[in-house]
Amino acid sequence: MLTDLMDYCLKKENFLDEKFCDNSIGILNKATYKKHEWDGYGESFADDEATNKADFATKYSEIVDFDNTSGTGIDEIDKHIIDNLHGAFLEYLGAFRYGWFRGWQGYTGIKFNRYLEGQEMRLHWDNIHSIFDGERKGVPILSVIGLLNDDYEGGDLEIAGNKTDMNKGDIVIFPCSFMYPHEVKTVTKGERHSWVSWLW
Image 1 (tube, rainbow, N blue to C red):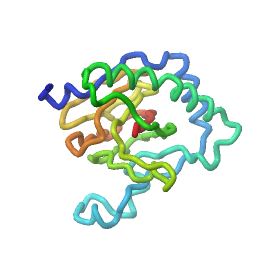
Image 2 (cartoon, rainbow, N blue to C red):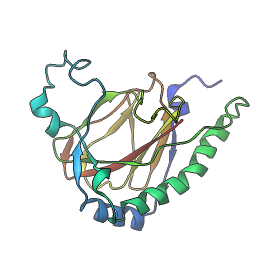
Image 3 (cartoon, rainbow, N blue to C red):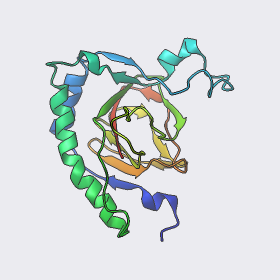
Image 4 (cartoon, one colour):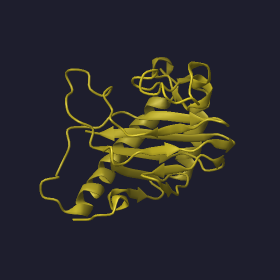
């Protein structure tokens, strides 16, 4: 059994081609965004003096508001990524040759994140409850993060304390375990466009 945490992180370069990434950003730039919300915000982060409700809306990344995306082309971006994720997850599972780790129940649609200058994603792990609606049941198994551009400064992704270098079109897949806390450092110049999904 592998013992290094990073052995369980799979990076796929050029998962999405450059043209698709550029076209996606063009469409996403016309979308309506809303602030990223944290489960339990205001209680679990109450001891963080750097965080308060006044700066929450500006400090952390924004996500596409899917209630206002009809006819924008975002559904097509979502579908293209989802259609290609299946093979990436199969590659991940096959890499370890664990006979008991053979499949999954499903994975979520895509959540698109935008980081403006001065924004970040604080350290967290993906104990995602919101993907289960009562009819769909399970536990999150794997997280996938994809990058749509790389023409910004700052905004480094760190997983379990390790900087994970990514370029436009790359993805990284890793466990949703508490052993894989991750964060996006503050963007210091430009805008960072990324997306996430979870397998369960």
